[in-house]
Length: 557
Image (cartoon, rainbow, N blue to C red; front, side):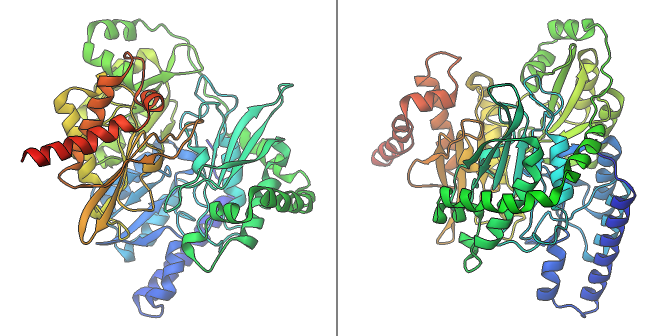
């Protein structure tokens, strides 16, 4: 993992001291809220429904044990004993007091964390595959490149006041676990016909009010050209992006209105101008950064303890079958820890849970933790012989739920419980759906199914790319939940299709159950997933189940 140098430490200390002065001026009235707003947003501080909210960057989702412990300490000392992991691989604190925020930032700085550019019209936290450096299907670890992009984009003088927020994701695997096609810039590591590594570059992806899948602007970009090419894209967007209407200010609209060919032509011209200015210094930096990401010293050991527990304990076996993924090193596994126990708030972690996760990473996981965009926590490097002990420790703090990739592993934004922009509740809907399918004991039979919920049209819950997506809206003061089907956030990304009229708050769980039961009735065997079945039969059987069933009930009543 990247370790700060003297420049990094000095830079962060200066930024924190600057913000401390700005907070003091806001408190004594020297700054109005309108004057303070852009300053606090540059440091990740929002004003939400009930209190301030601080969003902390977890660069490309990677944490050390000491960093996780510090996040737990912050939760206890300055919040209400918990934090919320987000779909941008960040953590949010929902209850900080304004005078104490500078102290929180200083505490973050002690472990090389910060909240810079987690808000505002700038380049946000760069995200990556949460299995990076561990996945068996990986071409190369994308984290060094993500770190290079982070250093380049932090406080970049040209890109601090873009037309709108800007998001970049990178993956090193052909199997996309980073949703790169829904980002302003998506980077996929690929190999060309002669085996050379490079990048497929996508632009103009994004969800929200106008969801779009990113388009390929470069089929193959050599690694040495990456940073100047990114600079060219953001420069063109900074020039062409609309500032007259924030709803049309994202890069996806710029690409749509100007056409991909025009954008490509302008980007290539700008690239020719800027690439000479880099003169290879970025590649020198990347080489130094890569040294920080050397693989851990994987140990050789027998796996008998795991094999015996797997055979003897069906509950452990269910967890292992559901929450483990293949690792590139023999004898190892990737552990995804579910933050989605049925009835819990998706993505929330108590300080006690954070400390246990930190201990497990330090004792068994080569001091490495990851936060996924799906709001779960990953131990990427675990020897199988340690899995029974890890499972036992997770059970002690309610983190041993065996539901990764199943219907109760729901992505949900904070919704109207916290967010000032939300138009409907998301957390209670997620909780009720998860509890319903836990009571029905159906989710393991249903198999892989991505359900995602957003509490407003901004789509922080990624509902557009859920196999089943739910969007909560306000209809004349009443919560109304629209359903989309067939979304996909992987390498075969698609935007889901709306089924029809929405459902009331007290109807939405029943509606989801009808969809799932329809799938179980029509699937061609247990190996046909929900998404496969939907692509085979289309939306009509599900629409019939949703609306004709309700119509029949209404007539009967």
